[in-house]
Amino acid sequence: MTLPRSVSTAALRAALRLGGAVQALPPRPAAVVRRASALRLTADERAAEARIDALRTTLAGSTDTVEVVDYGAGTRGGARPPARAVADVYRRAATGPAWGRFLFGLARALRPARVLELGTNLGVGSAHLAAALALNEAERGGVAGRLVTLEGAPALAARAERALADLGHADRARVVVGPFADTLADVARAERWDLVFIDGHHEAAAALNYVRTLAPHLAPGALVVLDDVEPGRPVRRAWRALRAGRVPALRGAAAFYAGRYGLLFAAPPARLVGATPASEDGGSLGRGGVPWGAPAALARETAAAPPDPAGATPDSRA
Image 1: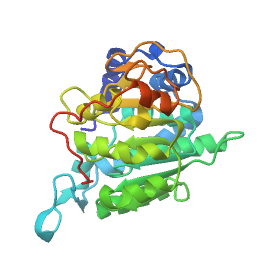
Image 2: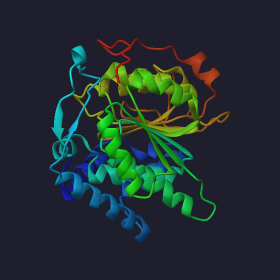
Image 3: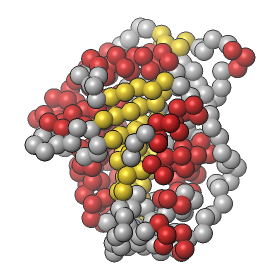
């Protein structure tokens, strides 16, 4: 549920205090997490956030309805998808203000060229990511970053596309419509992704399957962010499986538990970086003690894949 900024900021700060130890991360991931965790903004960043806050106000007060296709639950028998109030969709599913700022900070610190989001919803999280890319590009020597965001519900995708255009990101962000099962593979192979935010189909097997699909197409040092990895949530099982090395390409990834977000930094190539042993929720060693940055071949030789999470099977529904 989308909470007021003061409440969500307090919740985020508490989650970060209880989460993984930043000092256990290698230097670059640690710097990225520290920058995002500070939740401090420059004048230009505050102006960008104010525009997103205006979008939030519009969505929270909207009297419109929107048809929402839920491919996780399924819309059966060709039935028309249910109509829901936009304000209700915003309150229940949109990225909250503090978490949006944290996501923005990750993108500002990482300075990615290519960003992929799974689960556009109304475009609020997308707006934070696109705003970070715009500010990165505006700075001297900045990269012209681009965002691709996937959404299964056509009506939500259309609203998000309009919102991103209104914020000035029409040329920076592209919304791809359709079930993840139909869209993800082609989108994934089209680029080398520097930052991936998985915020759709919140089931363990589905999340793990999406990471498997994406892993061969991640850039060296890429960051994968999983939403809803708190204890007791289904995606927590996927997070634990990834931490245990279930996806070979991400063994040796540096991991950080940030409350509702689980962060995995893919290892850069041909580097061995000194690391501190990992706990369940944060750290720098992959399964079997593989240092962050270890070549994939070394990871394969030293880490055997554990079984899938209990009850998890590949699931292609988006």
